[in-house]
Image: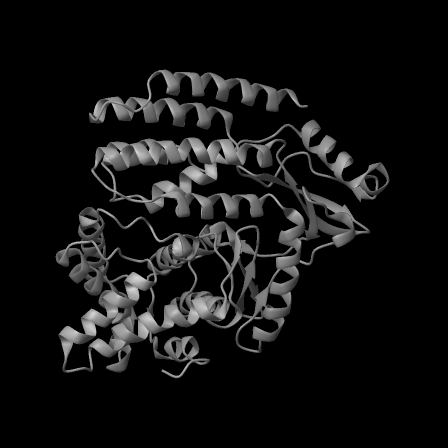
Length: 438
């Protein structure tokens, strides 16, 4: 058993005793904030799965809880803390075996990236440049304890704000995804599936790329894959690309998502820009996809129900019986666990308004005009309505089935605003409903 794991166990035991001695009996903000700080500071110092869990939660529960509460949870960011190379080397030898490890050459001891779950190193294998994704020791063992403690923080804030939310499905989903992310054999399988889809999706106009995994040199805690050329989106934007190229990148991202969810039912849900590279070839650009740990599968029934909700909102603009159509939208929303039936009528009306805003860009396209993702007024209205809606909720927890899907959508939206592009969107609507009579 590693020293780091023993240290972690010791620190968490101490924390549990403190929390047990000062269990959340007081209803005042100060007491609960202090308790939350105690938990988040301990987890932050220990790293591990708490980094990703905290990041997910701070995004999902923003506007639900007081700013002081969200600020504390947001301290658990997915911080890049380097692991010493001798630890990385030991993991490689243990996972691959000495014989396979010796087939790797010129391993760069300095990682090109480091996050809460793994570290990335460049190397060579059979004369080819490869990337090694090496899992941090003890991460898999930390998931249950970390998620349980963060859940305690969130439940405390529910009591504080008089919300009667069942957060168990949300944290079960979070635990499921984190457990999947530390299973690198599963990630390799998803990478293989994606490569097949991307080959079919790519054509002379739209080019998509992803690494090739070396299955024989990969294990549950190590992935060896081909190195892929390209610039990070931040570095690419520093080259001041032409507006046409920015529009092309926006198209590649939107087109990919429409196929990921609506057709494949296979979505890489991590919203981080760093999971994309831009590859320029012969004056054109292509999109390189990296990191498939947070991939989620969505079955046909789920996607059909999701599309039914979108379609019902779209139909609201065309029907004369607005009251009946709004009631239908709310009914589908309740069935889909997006809103609890017990919420106030004001909250339900705002729910419909927010969904209306979500499909508004498609109506703009119907008027033969492009939608501007840099539209400050649209972004302001959306943020204002969502904030007000979440502030009214008493029973509706964040929809666990949509937790990671909407994180991905949030990342895409942020990227499109960053690109500041104007796009005609009716074509994407057709792609979304291609397999469904709309």
